[in-house]
Length: 119
Figure 1 (cartoon, rainbow, N blue to C red):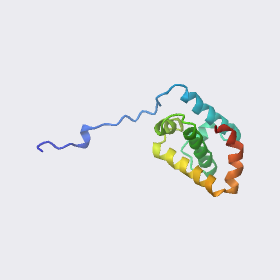
Figure 2: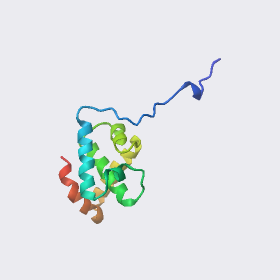
Figure 3: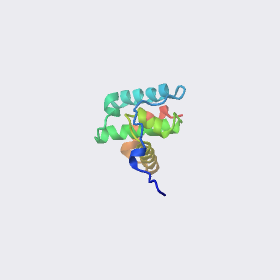
Figure 4: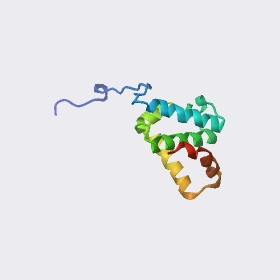
């Protein structure tokens, strides 16, 4: 190998503009708006990098609902949630699933309100 591959030979497009797949954009926006109304948090807060527990829990619920209803790929859902990575969506989905499995009482109240959003 006379020529090594260097990091300078590659680039990554960090565009935060999500690719729209059919009407999944509209469905995702509808879920985010509905959760915003239910939670009393603004859409900007839900999409922000805030790490406050209340915002994070609702964000996880949005990720779970969008994933459960197949509103796009993990990357698509993450981009619609404020430019997050696909692994963040996976974490949110797994967190909600574990809370549902353990019958957490605090979470059960939130989930009861959101249940009608999941098909």
